Length: 289
Image (cartoon, one colour):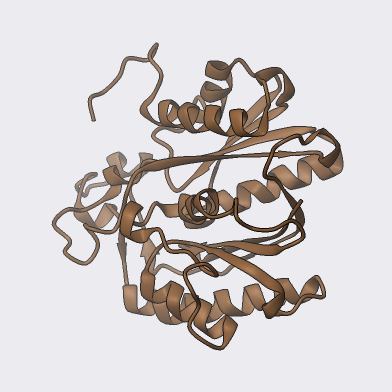
């Protein structure tokens, strides 16, 4: 990835802008109608100025922007913040973007993880119901978040790395995980989390038309969806995009949503959920309008 000068659009801002424009077109929104920009992902390529402010400037949006880092739950946690801003009235319309540039953190000598990740950007518009004119839109019925500390998924590279006596680019600074422990610990957490979230809204698991799950590991998704439904989920119930896009950190569940949401009927309920390092789990219960 060639280094760019300070006066050029950064790599991450470029893919973010590309996804943002598609989301704005789909929602029928101009820059003047957007009040805030959130860039939320597993890694940002620099600490400041915020990628979100750079994207805001590139798109000609007034208002404000900020970055968030919540590993693989970054996209859902950002949607939570967007929902809260709109619900509280501090913003009418929020652009949430997830430019996942994960490949620079991959250790290509690690046979357990080098094949896992892909780079991608997703973007979502959250706005007031009375201003929404999109052909396909969803009402957010509620959000739920949960975190529990674990070092079993870890990335240690950061600005302090150059101040230590160890190799700042050493393989132990890059992405590494104890995959078996993560599988055993995260799956039950995610199942309980989503079951409780659905129940909070007076819904049964059978009332959920579609599960747009985090795309980290196909065995994880099959186990979680199977435990929730009490049987093997069909592709229509819990679509998989890992075979095309790999693990794209926080963007995976939104890629699944983007590709498999237009056929859902008005009034049908779905769940968007991500889970990953932290551990962190974020979900939204949504209903097609």
